[in-house]
Amino acid sequence: MTTLIVTLALGLCGLLICLRLTMLGAVLSSFVSKWRLLGSSQSLTQGKEMLLSVYQRQLADNRPYALPGLFGSSVILSPSMLSWLISQPESILSAKHAQLDALNITTTFLRPGIGLEPHHEPLVRRELTAHLDAIEASMWEEVGGALAELWGEDSEGWRKVNLDFTVRRIVARGSNRVMIGPELCRNTGFIESAITYVTRVSTYGLLLSLIPRRLRPLAAPFARLPISASYTPCEAHLLPLYKDLMARYESEPESLPPHLFATWLITSSHLRFPPD
Image (cartoon, rainbow, N blue to C red; front, top):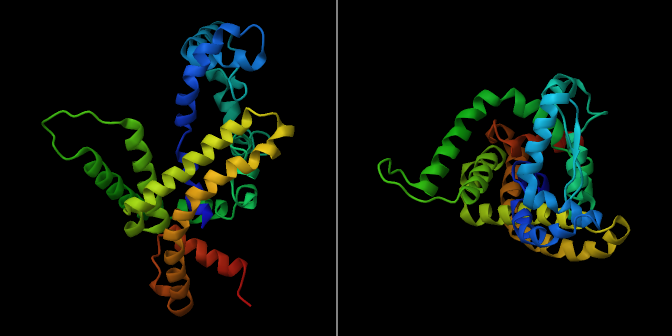
C-alpha cells in the first residue's frame, strides 16, 4: 500500500525546501570562501549564472564539470556524452540509488524495505509497459478532467494560476488513476493527504542530508514523526479499497479491473506470498 503512495515521490520535486532555503542562501553567500556548506549555498542564489558558466565552458572544451550544491555536487555532462550515458548499465550508473540516497529512504520511508527492495518495480516494467495503450486513454481523461476543475473551461478570459499547485494535483490524480482507479483518485481528501505525505518525505529527506551522517540517527525520530502523521490519512483511504479488491480476488478474480496497478499488485502478491 505504501508503494502506491510513495511512487508519486518520483513525479513530485522538493520545491518547498528550495523555496524555504533561498532566503538563507542569500544571507550566507557572502561567506562562501570560508566554509564548504556555506559555499554550496551559492547554488541557491546564483544557480542560473553557474549553469550558464558551465555551458559556455563546455562549448569550448566539451568536458564534464562538477557543480557544487547545498545537498551535494552535481556532475554536468556535455551533450556529446549523452550516448555514453544511455549505454551504461544500472550496475554502473543508477538514478534510483542516487534518489534513495538523496531522500534518505532508510529514515523517511516508514518501512525501508519498500524502497530498498521495491515489489512494484517488476510490475511497472512488465505490466504497465505492456498495457500502455489501454492506460493512455484513462490517464488522458483524468489529466483533462483535473485541468478543467483547476483552471476552468473558459477559453476567452484570462486568469492567474499557481503552476506548482496545479502540477502537484495533476501528477497525483493522473498517476493514481492508473494505480487505484477513478473513484479514489478524484477524492480530494486522499489526493491532498498523498501530496502532503510525499512532500514531507522529500522535504525531510533533503533536510537530513544537511546533517552529518553520524548524527542523522539522532535526528531521524524528528523526521519520522510528521511523515507518519501524514501517512495515517492516506492509509485510511487505501485500506478499504485493498480489502475490497482482495475479497473480490478470492471470490471472483475475473471481476477485478484488468488495467489497474492495484489489481496487478494483489495478483502478484498472492503468487509471491500464497496464503497459508
